[in-house]
Length: 176
Image 1 (tube, rainbow, N blue to C red):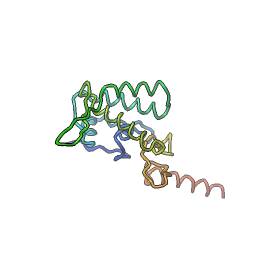
Image 2 (tube, rainbow, N blue to C red):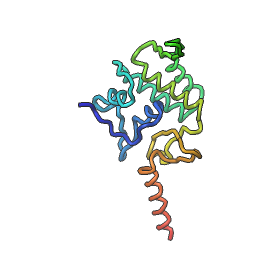
Image 3 (cartoon, helix red, strand yellow):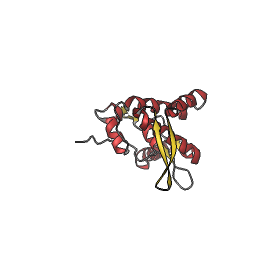
Image 4 (tube, helix red, strand yellow):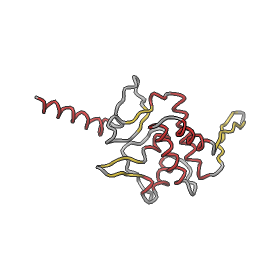
């Protein structure tokens, strides 16, 4: 029986989804990869191959991506570039069309490389739409703001958004 992952936010682009495999839950830090079979379940959920040894590269890339987002600059960018140096896209002509073939120096790094490369894709298209939930530090989740006007604030309106609105209401009631 396959492990079913219970996470607060799913469906984000691969790089952000990798970041969101850790989160605080009622004062305790949760990590999908700490669960038995968690790495394989996460890879299966994302439709990625499950190469042996993928856990260490995924954990490393997750920490590098978090560092890039939280402390941008040369050291973090250098660490991300090291992950990216483990693979490349090679164009190939197949059946009359061009296909990008992913090559990695070690199969265990393929999912991690895909996440790092996916982050670059987000930077190329809409860097201002990569956001951290406004409930930080209570919530550490990241999301791709796909709203029309780019004003999404919370990872989920049902959880963090409702908590923020309830807290605002409580403060208003207390000041009356």
